[in-house]
Length: 503
Ligand code: NAD
Image 1 (spheres, rainbow, N blue to C red):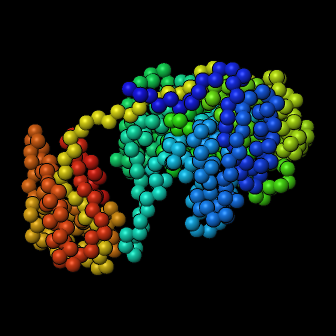
Image 2: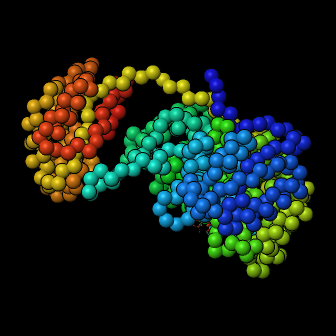
Image 3: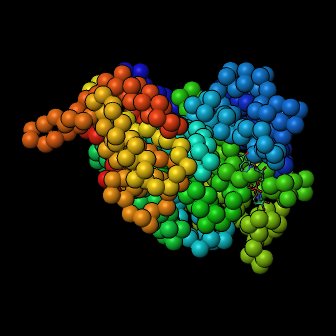
């Protein structure tokens, strides 16, 4: 079985020069990139930056993707990207470059470590040390949206078994690699039983393979509330795309400054490292931006390419600088910090401190294998998939469910009969409640007229796709507008669709 090796090379000494694609970005991007690269060079990281043009300038030149072909070539050649934040111009038609890069390059794991640096950086949570591992490619961010009727727009939430297995295994392997003790899964499977239910099921399956790492699951709403109130209770959190986007911002915000945290976007062959913050146009050009977020991203990059010793050296010099009280404006505390430094002065202080260890803050002692995370390639199990019906979605401007219900129930259709109609998921036919508000979007569920018995239980009978085609032709013939269909399947005898509320 071929494995997914997320670390692209095992460079065990700093003598090997590694080429990386570097994007200077927009706003404060060039300032913090210059500072970061100066520290990497002084530390002997031995990287060779190849500059790629991405961002505002490229967008405004008429390229709606924000990235030129030459930049793709450099990325494909080097496989590692260090990227400063970019500005997406306001207005329609500009695609998010981050989403484009993540999806095109298969960067499935977004890793955001956030920890408190108490008492040197102000935070209410001195013991906080959390890593959020967010699925980066699917969920509601698949970007599949449609307006289906005058009243209704839809966004498809796609959760896949390979996607869940990849990210959840990555989270446990990360915990193993970095000596973390616990992985918490956050989902909303009390409501979304199939999509979030799958994420939770896979989490339980994978967790069982790592008995030495504690595992727990929380519903996302109470989970994020607890994260905001007691972040010290969390270690590694793994979650899907949207929830991960939200909770990683919560985590960064409560740790002290948005300018401090770095992040990695990791895929099979390519990885991209960046600060979690944006291009901060409000302070651009003032030389006051904190380069720490991008520097921490660069440290993650060095670990990823196997240059762990130099990563530890830079991290310890940075921790020493913070501990000595040399701070940029965003974390400066009057009466406590020693000096308020510019971006460049801060970088110089870090360079001066190369080779030093922090005294109060915990020094970085990442070992050689940190970063070498390998996960098995997904193997699709063979399941028996049986078609048992279809949901037909109809655009209808009427407001009496009995009227459309009767018309569809009376439809002479070979083998398929109407089981129920829902409106926004709530059953309105048969026996709906008059209080239920109905839009112009009607989901009409058709299943086989006959049921079959399986060990005494009545289950759905199989149907042929031709029967569904015939049904659709009949519905169309009596004047109803079909906007889409969704087939109903059983997988190895298990229902693969949700019941309507009240069904
Ligand atoms: P932002 O993160 O740029 O700024 C939020 C606040 O934090 C601002 O007050 C800013 O001054 C401050 N801040 C951010 N980074 C800082 C640093 N390193 N040092 C000191 N202070 C810092 O968020 P925003 O204002 O919502 O977005 C600005 C632009 O950045 C937008 O165009 C947005 O699309 C883009 N953006 C890009 C990325 C990326 O490229 N990865 C991520 C987020 C936002």
